[in-house]
Length: 374
Picture 1 (tube, one colour):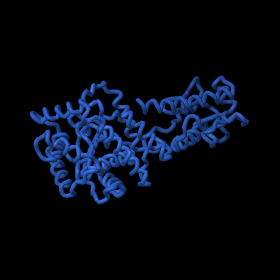
Picture 2 (tube, helix red, strand yellow):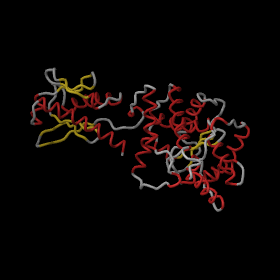
Picture 3 (cartoon, one colour):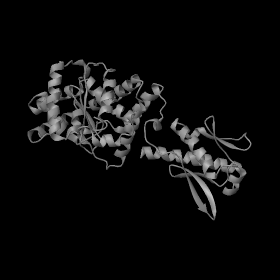
């Protein structure tokens, strides 16, 4: 499950993890999954013929073949729900909300979510948790799982609270962290093995959830306090990617605005202004013969866009102090040659203007990081 819904739902991932040690009969797993799916679809409307359906089915097929249970055929369904969420049921059922599809910014992020949920199913997480809670609900595994997912009432709610008391006493502590951490690890592993989906997608999706959580009022989780903090999961995913030698280029898997060039009239002069993420990089009215100032900065903007798309970092935007005239480099590639006219317009020396432009780009990229964090 990719994020917290109401506390009763979060209990699904708070129960003990017997994991892969117990092998569940495929027929029984399919029966429990089908029964629980029926209850889920009474609660939420399934979206038919969604434009993303074909893509989701294709991702699931690719990921499933890479798991330890490649024989499982996954059924991915989209449900009407504004909350950003996904969850899996026994037998290969995966549900994704319309809110999640709206929030996801690339096929790689969708693949990250599906890989996470498929890992849960690969290790029988839902069956194991339902088995541990079955006695609390006085019924079948499907009844227990449905109660956990959909919310229990009356005597069942008392049973859930009793389970919470067990958690508080430490009997079930830390299992939730283990379950979610393993699902994140499996997700990264399968995405890497796919050679098709960028594993950075699972990171950027989780980072966005973490940022959203920071803007919500802090809720005292009480007996649920060992639920894995999203920030902790984000840091662990970064460690996994770095250990695998992955280039963590977040722009490769998310939507982002390219540099912009606009014309402005200032004191009767037509200036071209280059900006990045709301930060002005430079302005000029000079250009080589046969070119306008805007055309000149359009070319600079395109070079900067390509460098950003390749994942360039702010420390790689530097001044080449040995060149004449002075120029700014994006890695090993020339980004901009600063002219005496540019410096005169800014009221600075050429060296001062170069330093200012480099600092402006760095400020824009720092703003990008803050926007992602918050």
